[in-house]
Length: 97
Image 1 (tube, rainbow, N blue to C red):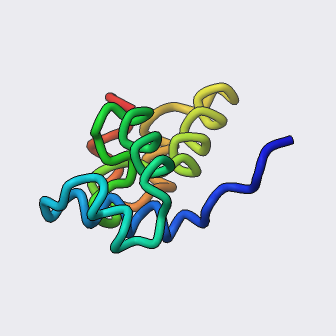
Image 2: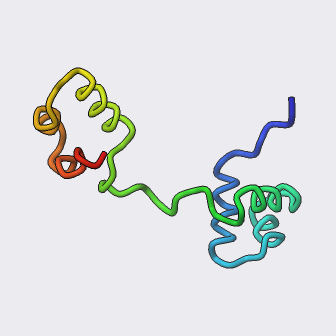
C-alpha cells in the first residue's frame, strides 16, 4: 500500500497555477507540492487539467437525470411520458441523451 495522496484542493491549486501560466516547478512551489509529484501529475494528464474550469452548466443532463430516463425507457414508458416528469430544459435533451 502506498502513501495517501494529497487532497484534491491541493491538486486543483496546482492546476490553477498552471492555468495562469506558471511553469511546473513554480506551480508546485506555490501549491506546496513536491516538484516530482507535480511533474507526475502533469505527465499523467498529458499536460491537460483534469478538473473542469467551473460548475457544469445546466445544459447537460446529470447522471441522476440520465439514470431516470434509462429506467423509464427500460420500463416501457414513452419519451413523452418521461419528459413530462423532467424540468423543461431537459425536454430537448431526451432524444439525444
